[in-house]
Image (tube, rainbow, N blue to C red):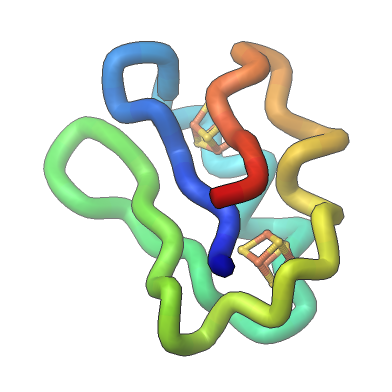
Length: 57
Ligand code: SF4
Ligand code: SF4
């Protein structure tokens, strides 16, 4: 299961995308999204999100 971003909580800061080792996170509209087919479940993004918007799927 891939990690997920709560789009209602995401402030679009980009911190998660900078941490992702496989570039699975991209800006879409006014939030960031995780591509579930690319995510390797490392958890790095979850720990850096200042809005606590990321959780394991
Ligand atoms: S780190 Fe959190 S608030 Fe920032 S873009 Fe990623 S999910 Fe959104
Ligand atoms: S869990 Fe790891 S691989 Fe998946 S989106 Fe977050 S940083 Fe990228």
